[in-house]
Length: 440
Image (cartoon, rainbow, N blue to C red; front, side):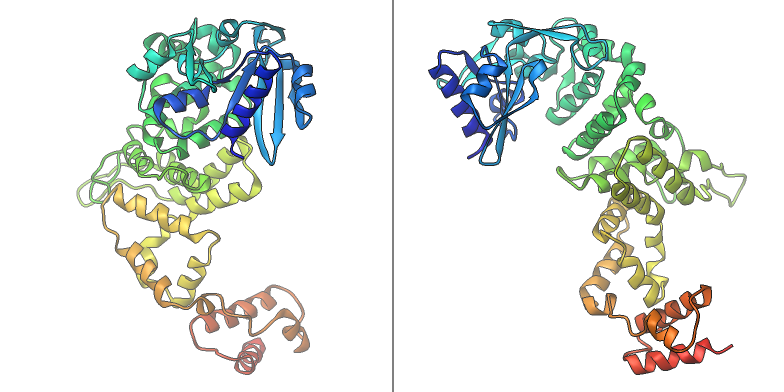
């Protein structure tokens, strides 16, 4: 069963029991645009307890806000009771709700006109009480009613306006834009987790460049990611970056991100040069150039701090930081020793490192020599040569009478180095090598 099939089945059941029921929100918008929709929501005049009575496989995930989650065969659909919301003290949830029998009243509490459409699934008739269809045709993201009130109810709606405009190639209606610009500083009232998730969607839905340009235009970028906003106007050496400053370069990379790309790759792209503004040093005379000494190390620390502040998981934080920390190493791959290159390509999720480098090149000098070199190495080098079994273990060294410590680790690394270089091929020769270098 698909989400749409379950949603239509829910509507049919509710109507059979003499309730109003419609598809609502993003799914109707997507259907009107001829796009696929992953999520389907239903709204109804049936009260939450009635919905639960009619659908035993349901969860009261937001019952006090009139929202019940109906689950069938692993598919879930939110069913919301028509309501109006009273007060938003926390800037996200209504202080209390008043249930309604009117779909018109329910729609007026929603965020944007393009998300305020209802559809009767039995007839495909669309009910439009807020001018959403006209805005879809005109390519406009417009808040329902007073945009300042809509944004005051949930500050994240300012970022959602940006994301919808970017995703669909729409423009933000002037009054809605002005409200976002005047309230941008209040986005800090939204939890870091919600901001992170909205930014990740913006990065991975296929319109990241436009999304970040709109974040900048609304003033939200300087609040949620001030270190990215500081990239503007930071010049780069033209012989390596003919495209322009760090902000231009980063936007060009964002533009090349594929829809539904890995979130960690997307964040790695966004943050790979975050260390450049604080390390900028101008050219000092003839024969010198702009420099960013230490920007990789500084950037890796900044990336970790940003990820921690946005409550990324430890695993994702480590991957994003590692992407930033290693992005310049590709320039050295043709000169790397074999062992060093093998260790490099063994980095977790190395394909993300490779893709970040490719985008970095395409958004600057355009040369893909190092990228091609690594690709060829991966094709020509058997996996067992990149990840060979250990020939010597710590237990072997203990058997030689060695005590664990710094020298212990040095010997194991030296054996691995020789193995990766192709100088050791079997356990006996590796043990003999370990014994020879363990002597004082």
